[in-house]
Amino acid sequence: MNQFKTDESQANSQNETAKSATVSCRISTDWDEQLDSIALKSGKKKAELIRDSIARYLGREDVPRVMSEILELKQMISYTKKQNDRLLEQNKNLHQRLRTVEGKFKQLAG
Image (cartoon, rainbow, N blue to C red; front, side):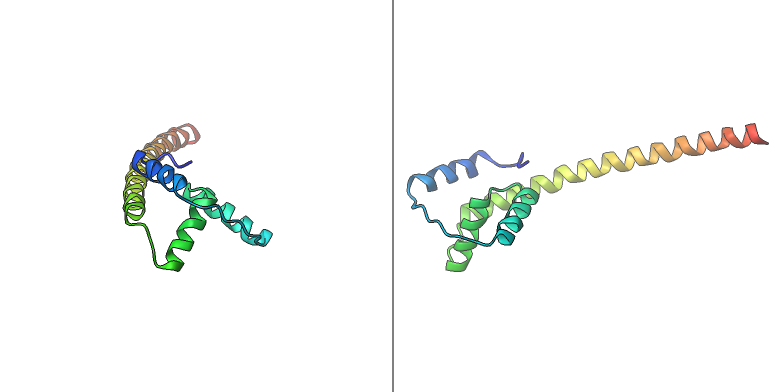
């Protein structure tokens, strides 16, 4: 889903993997389901959500990652605005067609 992910953020993720450790822990199925839902809505992987949460907890948010997220969100806003504008125009056209058909119906019924 995350069609807005930039090459820069992908490169950052690859660099982090090269110099990182693997940590595992057990969490409740409820938490896991919540993470799945958030990941689906945000277009991020669960591992990325967990890393971001740990970074925030440790007070070590990654500036390039935050900047990349800002860019990604701006792109998403722009995309959804264009989609919204398109849908509004489509809605306007449908209302106009409805009025035309209703007018024809009144003529036929009258």
